[in-house]
Image 1: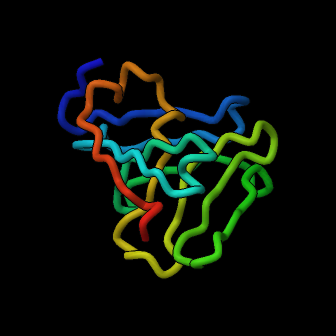
Image 2: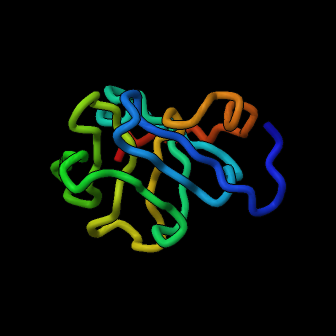
Image 3: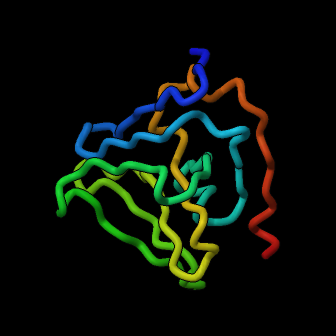
Length: 120
């Protein structure tokens, strides 16, 4: 789908308990090889936290804080889909959304930035 300027993109976890809306597709997506991203199948899009709307019941999401304590990674309590991450000590002007929450046609055409997170 081609998005006009300012056209929101919406997606959800597998069971639909967590909905995500972003203002538009990102300019690119990131594919990281760190252990967390590799094991969860993460492909990231990034926005300012104020621009991302997460629609979920208060108990629908489960947090996971990795050893470096820079981000909180969130997954759906029901279906286990990794939906997004929020910053703890990472730059507060950015949060990540798992692009797999959206239909592939909405983002597969975007350039992919390969990140060597395994080397950090």
